[in-house]
Length: 454
Image (tube, rainbow, N blue to C red; front, side, top):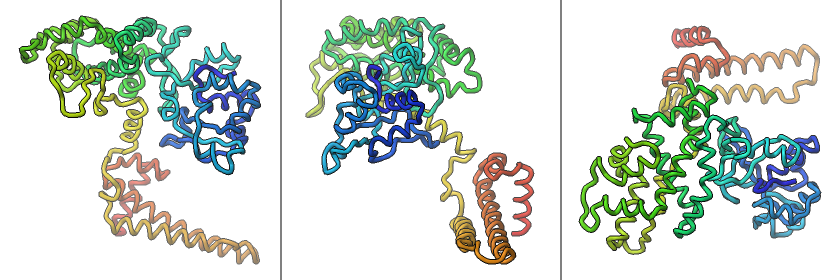
């Protein structure tokens, strides 16, 4: 049975497991026009979604033993048409096309395995379309993580953080308030999330902040330790969710708009000070009475834009031609970085090996040419070995060994040139040695011998 909001690709994977097969084996039932998206490390992304044509949907329904109408209600992507497979001469064949889940039906997150087991009898991985404002599994106290990131966790344990679970229970009331105010609930959440995510980055320099470090400590299983940077990325959305809910609720209150209006000076604008009433009130609502001056000093935040739009509307000020004043509009540059994006940056920094420079900018053209020349010569030696296994044992052995030894010598020389260039560019000797499958001492001796030879 499909789960509500499940990715079609996730259902196919679970069906394959039920049959004791790999998902790739079951995918052969469809003609796939492309390949699933992969992480930089090579693994298939968990949020890779598959879109089927009409014939392909019939195959899935038969495979599951579930009526197409049931699949259509449960799977958001089941009825999505892709012109490349739904029209043309091959439209009668069962076809599939891989897409990114976010481009099909929105953000994807891992499902709770305990809930999956309760529903299907199998505690397997499932991936569902779940907006970020609904990531708490209330039954089991889990925060469901984004499925597009290259990291091993599917959820974070909230059993020691009842305030996060309580915030999820409050959110439906906030959503109803947004609807009454004529605001899309997703818009309200997106703006509040951007506001608080900005605070999260600034909180590293807030000496008074004690709540978020405690929450992150629990989310990390008791101790973030040396992986604090990694946990700050993975645990951010769960740690700030209570404040996001509180900010969204506050900004939807007409009383807060009135406070913002009076704090701005009304029809007689005045400069914002550290004692700004609006910032002080918002700090109180998120349980931080000391936060007011910090917010007052931040003039480039999405919160400042929301406040400015409210005030300008009351002053009947108009913007440029074609400009639509919307307090809930979030600028692209103010959108917080996603977990997946931040982890990619973190991984790239780790791979830099002590040197952020580019290879072509650091290594001379002559040295690059020499490395390429050595590799090409080694390749030519190996190409000449095709079909060499005919003849006497002595003739074949001599040909193989002569060409292989020559190729090995050329590769060894290319290795020395490459290692020399990397170390000269600032890459740690230990890392270069590991990539070369040598000890640091052996590599140092090789490089020293190369310098003497030069």
